[in-house]
Length: 311
Length: 257
Image (cartoon, rainbow over all chains, first blue to last red; front, top):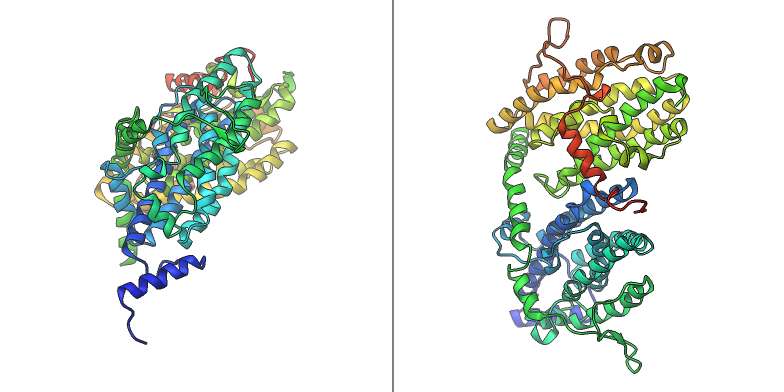
């Protein structure tokens, strides 16, 4: 069989994508496809790892056995998701160590939302409820991704995330039905997390550098705006049903479209937070760097032990 | 509390408090462990230990009519009966590994004995908990083996951690006030016997990585044991830990969470 030219390969690759086939690790793929995927998957993995911190902070203080046990389990799941995603990214030729170095040096990005503070217990519930709902809507879409290992990782992660949503929601229901102090705690937390959560689906598609190519190769299957609208339509009735208000005067159901209208977030803020200048970026990375540095001797020892055993 | 139940209540409280407090310390690694695999492992162990405390608190509920949440989240720190050992700060990863290993071995010998207890509910609970503890022991023992003799630094840290942790860990076997009754009634064989069985096991594991313990010719500890916890004579580390544990729970009076 004659060698295919680069262009013929690309045509064949895009035909496969159009037929809805999954691309697997050993398959030929355009360099841009590989690069875009590594960027997305590793960002996603970093988000899980950094995402352990805002909620993990509350593990020592979690009130009651049930909340304490579910919170540890949840934050543990995030570490597990990070592990799974790093492995998916490794199938594209980059090691976990390289990816973690990029995170710690500040070169790699991760989800904007984990750079906001969690000043009260209610923030833990709201993250589980709002942030994880937004994440699951996005990840359900990514479970259709053309890259097999990513799609499969997403399926498993969505399954676990659906429990996190239930736990977060349950915790906020308890606060919403609780004392006046607990209710205002829940409202304040929703106020804090509303816009950061809206930003999670990314900038409007016209502003997004990577979105078009990712859509063309079905790395993702919906635009940022579609995903955000789905989230708003899903969550607004839930928030209001608990007697909590959505912190946006413009938020109302549009009778003609059947969708909720909402005021757009401050995209300049998203840009700042993503590029390292959010309220907690420094703190988050410093904590990660310190943990990484303090754990260096353990990784070296485990490596040395393994090498010695292999000899 | 009826007088006849006091010995069992004392023992169960010590068991439950040990598990809760070490589980709390283990959970301090969630998000911060040296590698993702250990982050996951210690989070898992934390959940198991806290889950085991819940098993013991549930047995206590029948005797005290006090819920597990009330026992853990409403009791004053001085009323806890955990040993001091489990309450010390998590330290570096070497200290965490050594503490967990010493605790897991103690759990092993204790649960084996409790699975033969004359007190039915304790016997059943011990048999159940043993299954999970077996995995903890595999994990912590493997870490002692892997870190104990790998690099200069890991050797130095593991030796130092063992030197600190061993005298503290003897507190796991501090004599209970009602120990004689518990032994006579065959609820358990007594802390002295358990400690002897435990020392035999840990000497072998540490010996394999050239860590020696301060013991005399008949395997009796030569160091001063860090007692006090079983009588409520705690350090400020427990005070801080319990304050953290109670922080949200007690922040709004009469609230559910």
